[in-house]
Image (cartoon, rainbow, N blue to C red):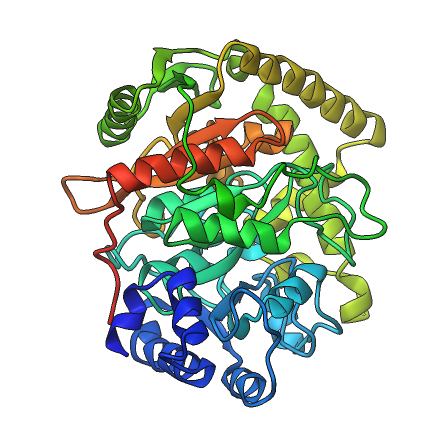
Length: 479
């Protein structure tokens, strides 16, 4: 049973299928690991152990992941009857509980997963770290003094440490891929419209936000996409259906591909910059491995990513969304939200968002959509684009703290590390972070592969080829 921590969700499901273990044994082992190791990590903020044990005592759906424990990020996706705070102290203190399962959670239950708890996140998922006032910081299992990345950092820490084999995550600017990079995991942001955000949302912030998971293996990322993908009645749009199950892409032959790569980015101040040397090493290493596997690899700049207006336009849409989120809390709280209820950065962003007029919002989103067309056109000359996931190794805890008199400092620090992730929330293209490198300081470094819209199949085939040739390092696992 001590070896379960090192197994991915697919392997754990196979143990149940072959009756080598029972669902109860899987769940009890996960609970024991959470109780043993989470005091160090602070990743699992809501423990649903009694519910999990009740679920395995009753007949479970005979799905592909029957009996496998999973954790749900405490943002967007909801678990009926469980506490929900979205990283907000005001919701935590109000004792708010979700009235129903989200569609994603319903699909996970139908696949046989057993929900064992909920994971920590930054307040409203705003910054790419998990250090909310409501719950305290989640610590990186590779190095406790460093950030897990965010906003799905609680999920990433739990999976990297082996508390559970897989966990829910979502991504509005990099929040699946960034913690995957910081914690040495696989993190796939699907194409826009691939997984439903219902029933409470159609899209979020014009389609920036996507649901997904963080995983220990490419095969888990593929199989979970098969579980969560698909149109639900009332969804505003849907991604084109795959030609075959995504799980079938893992291990399938990979034709020679045209791979472009890039390591330069535009800073919020409008200057071109080069990524950290360890991140550069990760991209160069991956480019060489891809070439050795028979792919045509060339340096390719996407000029549309280097437009200085980009950050301001993105922030106009994002800050308006934060303002709407706070206004949306009023029915649950039966009062208006005040500055004292939220972190200074959240309030400052909401105030910024309230200053964005409706015409300015639409103008910003139209500008981003035109830029998305220009970015998407780059896939006429390549099949996959290779970039760093973030521009630095995992930063130390506290890196995104505000400054006296400048609560927005954290968001501009965040903008410096996410120039390669957020654009693909705008374009809606699928992107996957892979744990290809470990720094000299023992910190994981990810690279990102980006595909054309709707081509998760291609990304998963290529990612699985890389994983087979050079297996990931999971040294942060706790037994």
